[in-house]
Image 1 (spheres, rainbow, N blue to C red):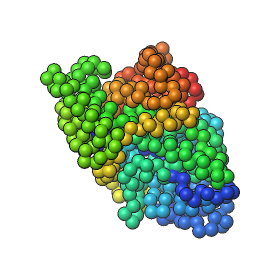
Image 2: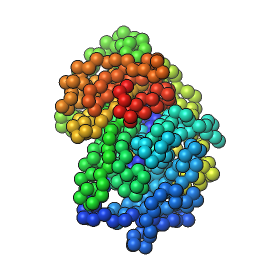
Image 3: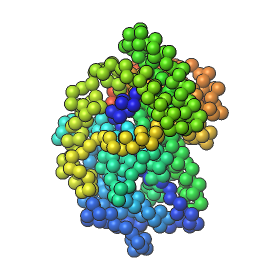
Image 4: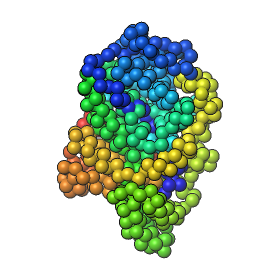
Length: 502
């Protein structure tokens, strides 16, 4: 399974965390200045020297504007605007500077009512995957057509929302760091996420107080529950500092690796039972896999979950991987088991990744985005060193439904969805995960039968819902639902933001 994770296409969204300096009692004005050299962040030693900026329209299309707040002295936001990708709305790109760490983001206003519509934060995982996957392959305003051009995406999620994409952690995509800085765990990354979110909403009043949804897929099933919890917990610090809290409304997770133990064991059902397509393994292999389930569960529970013991957890990972992942047919696409991997796929089964990398290596594209000169000339969609660092830290071994449960109890909604043809983070695993969440509405949720939901009169998948928690599948989709079923994905998210049941 972990070989599949390393190949996983992932997207990212925003980054930063509320720093301890937010203990001040009164609100201080944010300030800005323009910097003609986008590759060199300018530190604002005296915020009084710079005037506040109240409107995104005042941002430059050629130079970065640097945003700062005296309550967050170690954080800068460098941002510029353009018509990149969408063409019908303004795009904003830039960096969150956390001392020696610099995280790149894309932000697109809603095509509908940007002053009123909700805000979506999007990240995928990998870990180590750039947000360019989601932006140019799935839910972004445009899709890469070839190495030199893009096409308009009518099913973009910014049809009725303002949407963020981010390259995180440092070292991924256009993000970078100096002095050996790095991030190798989700809790560490969450600190920077929460800080950036607070700076952004405080800085731009047109978005302040709007419903905020934190979304992601794949390893985003690990990221999003932790990131959202950090944002929620740091609201207390914002209030104490005299700043308004973030209106965290929901988490949205697609084909997430939320519980790695369940993801691993679901390989048996996805390969040996007709839960998506007819069985793809021979009988003897399926018998062996089924026999291994109790031992795998016991090892993971005792060494990874009940108490974390590094050597024991690694032994569990090796045993379960050998039993459930090593037998997967090498010609099949683990992100969509109805297909084979495409040629020239960069190890992720989709050849368009090569075009995305070539497109984001172009000097004119980089100039439009304001990419720092510290970034290598050849863009890499996946940083396997970052991926290896997270695995070395064994970051994946956590039952993140514990975070989801706490968010639900605090009124933060959760939408968990999954394409039925994905084995890497299957709908089977995510269905079991949602039913395992221990919260006050668990009994009601588990008692609900799965029912079909429709788009334009046609069955789109099945769903189960109770109170703030909803689970949904999408027929005909794999790991990247917005890629395979863009209309259904857009409709699902638009209904979710509008409070309309699937």
